[in-house]
Length: 279
Image (cartoon, rainbow, N blue to C red; front, side):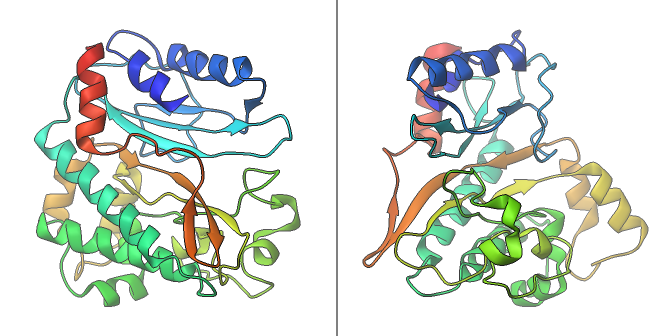
C-alpha cells in the first residue's frame, strides 16, 4: 500500500486519487483498511482525513494507512515522501532527524521496561537534533520535563495494536496503555497512549514525528512560553514546512523487539530511488 502510494503520487493529482490507489490494494488483497486513510500535504495537522488538495512540486506528502486482514487484525504504517524527485536540503535534514528519532525509539524498547522510555528517547533525539539546526537550545532533559519538546512532537511515540488499530481503545488508554495508572496532564505527554512495561506478545507501533504547527507556534510565542528552550526566530522559518512521520509495527519477544512484516522503504536513498522512477 505504501510503496504503491510512493510510486503513484505526483504533482497535479489530488490526495484523494492517491488515497483511492491505497484503498484499492487493501481490498484486492482480501482485507480492507484498518482505519480511514491519511494522505495529506498538510502533515502538521495530526489525523488529517481531508483529501481535497492537489499535490505540488516541493510538497511533502504524509501517508498513514494500515491493512486489516481477514482475521480482522490491524496494521498501521506511516510514510513521508517528497512530491518532487528529491527532498530539498531542509526537508532532508528534518526527515533524517525523524529517522534518527525512530531508531532511538526502536533501540529504547526493552523487555519489561516502560514504553515511556521509548517516548523519552525519541523526544530527546528530536530536541537535540533541532538544537544542532539552531531551533532549540538548553538541556534536553530539562526541556522534556518542562514539555517544550511538544512544540514539535505533541503526540505519542506509539500505541498498542490488535483487533483495533488502537488496541481495545473503547476500554480506555489508562487501562490498555497504563495498567490503570494515571496519565500525565502535561500537553504532549498526555497524548502518549502507551507507557507501561513491554511484555512478550505486546504488539505496538513506533511513530515519532516532527510537526511545525503554525497555530501552536503563535499561541506559545504570544504567551512567552519556553523562551529558554526555543529559538523562535529560527522556528518561524519553518512555519509552512508541514510534518514528517514514519511508522512501523513491532511485537515484543523474550529476545527483544521484532519488526512485523517486511521492512518498509524509509531511508532517504530508498525513497528518492522510488520517486526518481515516477517524476
